[in-house]
Image (tube, rainbow, N blue to C red; front, side):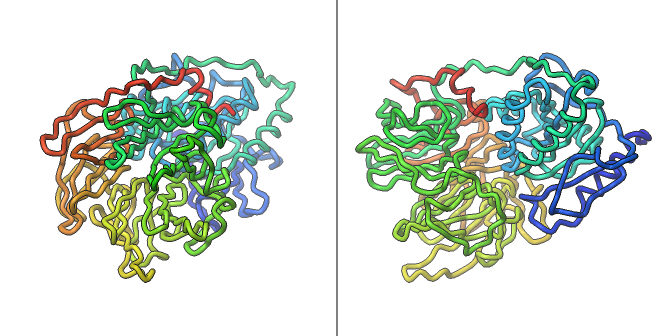
Length: 557
């Protein structure tokens, strides 16, 4: 039975979050007011005070969470009376949630003490229910505000949320003032916070900054959440995306340092390796003496000249694409916005990009120097068929057999197959699903840990894929395993699993009989003998750690 106060609140929020939308969810704004729901998308507002005579409703308290992080005690709305509160309902797998984190950091930096951001982590995947894993996500994404583990979705249900992310604005009296779902609402939130400050200034608005006990982690490794790795047999080198250290570490196959690109401080800066800056770099591809890097948070592709040891941006503007774009759209590489590129693959002078932030596959024609949206409508779904009408869900890993592109489609927990152009540029075939459940009526919750054939297989947020000798090796990230898939038979078995072997592995690469695994949450590279499966940890030599205080500056720009 629902309390009389919460019931109408839940009803109103449900109306808003299920209302018909005229634009894609990426850029949807919801305007809410107590007793009123605007239908206009031209002048959206989160603010409810403009409605004369409207009865304001108490926001439900933050009860039901299993644990609190980035604070030494649970927090109630009563504790925050006199301050503006911004709730962020999120889950750490979600790219739109990840995109929202820099906005929240800006809000915190702009209104210290006045606005308190509270993250409500309401999980999608089973792996995301565990407090220890949420803690890792907080450290990886350098979150500086309190987060409650809403593992049972009690707070989610109290607010009747149905979309990640959703922002809830609460005034200093603890009254609900509005909501917005999806990403891209920074300007709107700023506007409404300023209106609330004006309304409550002199009426008990508190401005003294609060100090929270932030989470820390003692890490012996010089790496910090390495997301991807590339092993090159010809040059006998390893390229490690040291993601949360915002740098690229280059070693030989035994782990001895060759070079490091990036200062360790987050930013977008070209130049010499020692001066360059990256932001959460992920997938890489090597072509001759050039290493291309998906600079994820900078929404750019960077080129590292390994001879001159210099870095330059070669695709993307450094700004995130903020529109819903369909296949066929293209433009000059350096003038075309990208959105969280997560992996790269080079084939026939064309770079294929897993554009996780747009749920699409893009290409960069390196001869014409143009970027094009190649496959996927942009809607987050798992739909097979022609490239233009297919749909992906946060593609995060790429591999190829020379004829097909294999995609680790993380949010659908599936492995997809996409035909590549032949020598005449003709594409024969359609997008398919090798393992996992696809279809226009299927949702994105068909996940688990189950081997088998085709539609019966269940992965859990797989981020990495590599092709070797007719087989696919999969980083089954949230199951902490390496899976083996036959793309012809569509069969899936477990290649390697074991207690403490991996913790959310994000990428893998194979060279000279060894598999190198970016063991992301363990801050290390695991080396697997392909014949014996004996697993050891790569001992890095000469690679210095980045001071944590400097690494933690990310998100405070």
